[in-house]
Length: 378
Image (cartoon, rainbow, N blue to C red):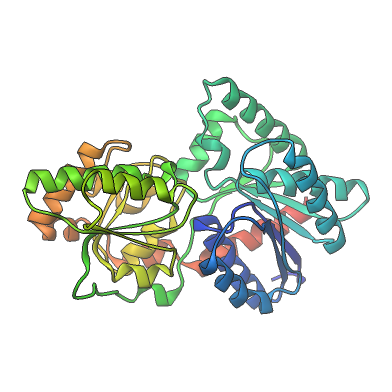
């Protein structure tokens, strides 16, 4: 390792995979002797995220800084940007690592402003899907990708992608980068490879994730109803997660006569949630490299997942666990198959030894640290 660095991670939403990724990185970077901080939105997250912040805050020499940052582009960005810039300027980091679309914009723009005042700061960007989910053929999508091109060429020192799919999507929608870029897979801690056994009253199927359409909870609910109709007996499910659209999904379940079959829980640690179901379902319409897939497989859970983002890179391109995205019929069919013969799905899962060799947190942290020093050297 080179000299200790002052590292600030900037992102909008402290929930889901990005927050998990940043927490893992901060743990490893603090252990390596760096001074680390977090800057993110103050309006997102609930009691679960508050507990996670409480756990990690004592380790962070640069602290946790939360300020309102809205999801969509709008007038509120002006005030949010000014508040964010003042925090970054005060902290004077050596490395500004932006995660997601909004975090990537703020980290790179304000890192560039610090450069103007002769500060030595490396500007790195990890999309984590983010703006790459937009349609490049729409007017809004074309505008977003034009902005991405400008930011990449003039305010970015290095790009970091969490999956081959994400990297190829960036190349196709934004263009060949003018700066160095590399693929660094998300990583798991050693203790996450311990198996989790389902509770005696575990539901047939489990959904864990944000309650928003991009993650497919509506597809999961529709598919559960269709699978039960095919099997001609009720199926049970647990849905774990928070989000503004949660009331909509509860109403959907009730309208389909599933109010008694689906139990909703707020966000909780993934390994605690795994014990609540026999088979996990990841029905996302889009993903980058979802941690929940890695965590569930490492814990020994069978899975049904859509073939989006980096998921096929984990399960294998031809895995029978994969289904087409956006189709409740395809998911229902696979749910029926899993109910009738659970062994088929278990046999389709990659071994934990294979996962451990490719997706370790130490490997992830080391490669990202190398990217930091390479960016500073430029």
